[in-house]
Length: 307
Image (tube, rainbow, N blue to C red; front, side, top):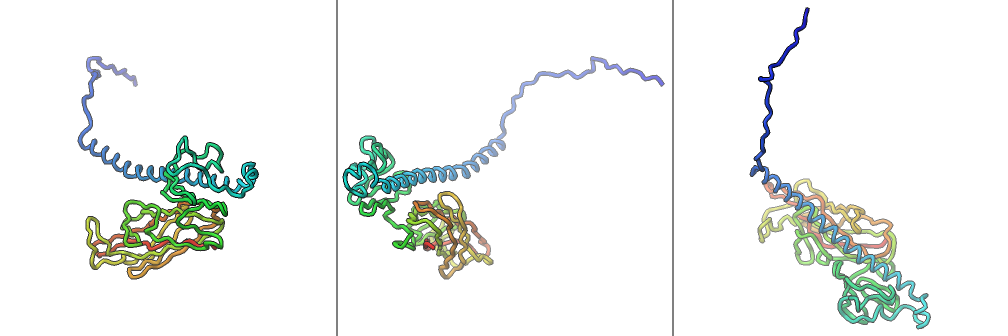
């Protein structure tokens, strides 16, 4: 059998034409892009704020650590030996006010340059300082024993084996907390309470959180307590993650009740002495409006005990 070769008439070949695309974005596409950008900003901006906040606290902590090391090593310096003193009578000669290029802080223990910004001296004899980049906590220097500690509360050792902070004493919190006397409550999970805490000794610490449910808390957009609401059926424990300087260390399980405050405990293991940012994050919200059931954690206090 012979095969015939097919030929194609060039006159019937398709001809490509140059076309100019004049189409743009439709309204639906623009709306989708705006929604995506809104979601990204909703997630990214709070995270950026938390990272910035953590970085500021880290800078404050670094300065406090350097000051404490300088105080400890001061008695062996030529300056101290020449003066015949143990710890310096004061940490600097700067007046009250903010640190600046001309008025450096902590020069007695950090050297000539000291700290030139980011701190404010708020009291003299005893010397008290407030970091402007931290949580506005106040540190006090005691020349008798060479300590530089938080004025509020510290825990550790025989002097302070245990301390308790009310929820209202938190150094900071996320926006969706409401103060309720000395307690604070929130209707939203992933909300946090921050505490700046000075641990005077290294070791293990028991952390205890007391809380109950506040189902009658005002609903969204309302200022009046709700009637007939209770804890969600089957909801047994509030789960609170505990972060130390931005790292999750443990989780506290608090028995949930509408009637009374219950306490959950856990252990922070092998923590070195120093100033820490301890963050409590509630993780397990539950909301069933059809049954008038809602889990709203109301925190009464935080307690730390050295073991």
